[in-house]
Length: 464
Ligand SMILES: Cc1cc2nc3c(=O)[nH]c(=O)nc-3n(C[C@H](O)[C@H](O)[C@H](O)COP(=O)(O)OP(=O)(O)OC[C@H]3O[C@@H](n4cnc5c(N)ncnc54)[C@H](O)[C@@H]3O)c2cc1C
Picture (cartoon, rainbow, N blue to C red):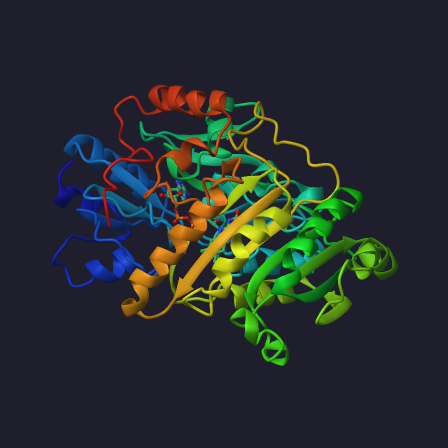
């Protein structure tokens, strides 16, 4: 198949370097505005599975490699390679079917967290989506999926029952525990290292929690380590339905004067309880209301919903920024990690930058490596989200990010393929898996993509 014949077969739009739409098609839907110089030889915004099959055939026959883009939200931009074909799934953006009685749904990949939950809400149903409204489920579910209410519902990918996948050979398969089980295992965790194109996810749904309540406390930076120690001790005694996150960030306006000696930074403790009733939620949050040191502010058991949770997360990770992000798992106390990061935060070049630590509640149970390739875990998850607007500030922010990331590395047990920068530090991709899962993924790539049609995690990234 040559390019003319691909153009005849394909319903979607395509562009090559020099074409008027090329740059917009390649970079227009990327979240991180810190753009690398890598770019593809051809970008195709496919309309349907036949388009995907046609592009894969063209790539095979022309000896070109392929990378797939879901929503373009991965922080380190693995959908940009030097050369090859970029298959952009942006037009596959529909919730196809909801079976409320069976608590299942079939969803195309480029549906956002907010749109998915909005479609389920009228049915009284929910799904363990990611935290920010605009992020798409595509790469989120392939990477593992750090979810709302993860302590009860599990990671997002653990609630995927099947995936419709176009393989490197151009065949459509339905992968599940029963059929193509090894491909299904790989797709639940491989993330940017997956070797196929997922065109639909079959999801398991859950009843919408009757009550969602949130408590928020802000503490002075000087007390942040002590608060972190207290939270780390408290977390195992809390119900897993309490989601607990500590943020080092710029103080909200009423606290800015109080925080001025600390570069305007405070420690914010945010707890969200997913509960059967308001009373149940208040009971779950009550232990947090006896903090080890007096807070600068407290809001206790405020009524929330998924739309308000998305709004809150969206305000912490705003659109349109240049960014570097490195989140990791740790078994160390949140207090120790906060002490390591607190000095950096007081000197962060950008006011939007934050460092967060999610401290898992209840007994932390590892993901079953026989079930999903997503296999890393720890009591604490997080790290710096370095975000800024002005290109003139790139060097200062990148230097700050690297120093903060290096300081936290001593407390790192492993990483998460969805939020680690394996472009700049390839070892972090290896650290996202148990060793046997990492080598099984490599073996399965050889079985399912023997001609190496799909770029692997590290190919054609280079500096940039
Ligand atoms: C603001 C923000 C908030 C975030 N919050 C969370 C969070 O709460 N929890 C969490 O777990 N993660 C979170 N993330 C990380 C995010 O889930 C991952 O970066 C994920 O990859 C985004 O999905 P995407 O489809 O946009 O990925 P893309 O950048 O489009 O793709 C990344 C890689 O995934 C592969 N890929 C994606 N879709 C497909 C497909 N359909 N078929 C085959 N391969 C595919 C490709 O190899 C591609 O290179 C957040 C990211 C951002 C920017």
